[in-house]
Length: 96
Image (cartoon, rainbow, N blue to C red):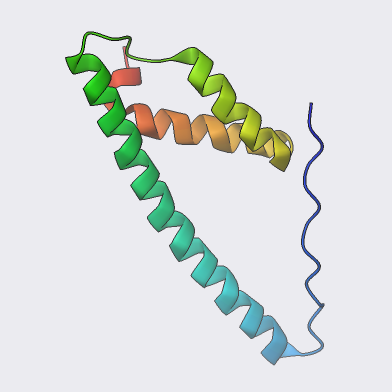
């Protein structure tokens, strides 16, 4: 299992203005994450629809394992995040 990547060093703010600035950065990051997750979900669902129209399997588990391996770098919660992203990408394909 791979070790989690070290967190970047962020200077600890000395005052409320510094905290507010970091919170604004978190807000920007969150907005970008939501945009990227929506895009990832749409791409994944397009791949699933293409596989289905070609008579392929609904889910390619070997591919999902590669995706999960990538998220293991974030530690135990990374695997949970990877699973959530995979579930979102499956859409109706992953539901029985």
